Length: 258
Image (tube, rainbow, N blue to C red; front, side, top):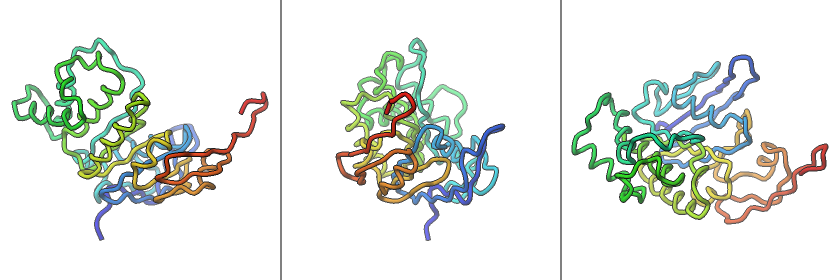
């Protein structure tokens, strides 16, 4: 039996002074999988990624990346965090940002050599933005920057790529091509993607995990009752791989808003 890319065995985690963020999570991500983790805000999705990165440790249970503790597997992981703010005057080119990803291979200081620059160019080309290599990253659009950050995560040749809301700053008109690129990347590494956008990823991912403090559902399809349980709303249809979603109306609150 092959070692999974990531595994959680009876994992509990809570932040100081708060209720548990994750409760008794048992989940395995096979090598080569493309897993989408969905769920409401505060459901523990980003915490799940932090556990895989070794940024936090479970209060109970065990987390492993390729059979080893996360802290011993950093070289195997590429990570693209959720981008909320960015200083547009930061004086660094798109190529420079990608070359920063080589630090994950144990490099600590610049300058980079010709081989590093060539490898970084190759990653930008793979993301379809090689022509932007010399431009200041702050001058790029949100979607272009996100492709640069994915290229940076790939610079260390990871076996596992973690993405936190990667399409949040990508223009809706280019989201399809962005996810098509991720599907190509999945041929070379395992991907775990956190997202709220179920529709965009439905035809790309292999499996879906629905998380709301606990693991509500995990598999190659998302049962309607699991989605409704996690999001506390009705649902008429949700099928993995289908291009349309038909959701039931949310219950109205006390002010009459849906």
